[in-house]
Length: 128
Image (cartoon, rainbow, N blue to C red):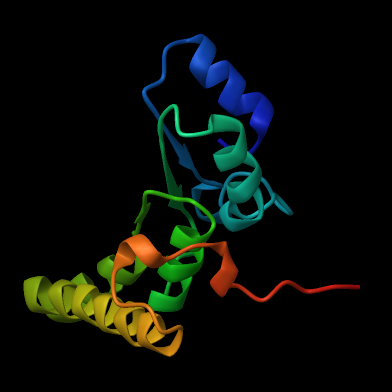
């Protein structure tokens, strides 16, 4: 799902949750990224279901941004697969630990002690 219109259709057909994803950019060239659509869809959903972000999440900072924009959680594919390819189970585990560590460092940099404190105020808003 990459639009509020798609989220409306998902609700119409009984979805209990939403995954915002552009499928790693493999399906349509020049498609919006998941993070570009996240805030609008979270606002539309307005707490009626959980929203998860997928696609393009490579660092702990990416995780923190998605959570700040209202995602309940994130789905991570390629980084874990890279770790698995290079180091098997231990490599995949190392990637997950690195993402966790990066997220924790970023939280400390934002003076946050708990995940529940993450919100949009920690994000820089670019103004043209």
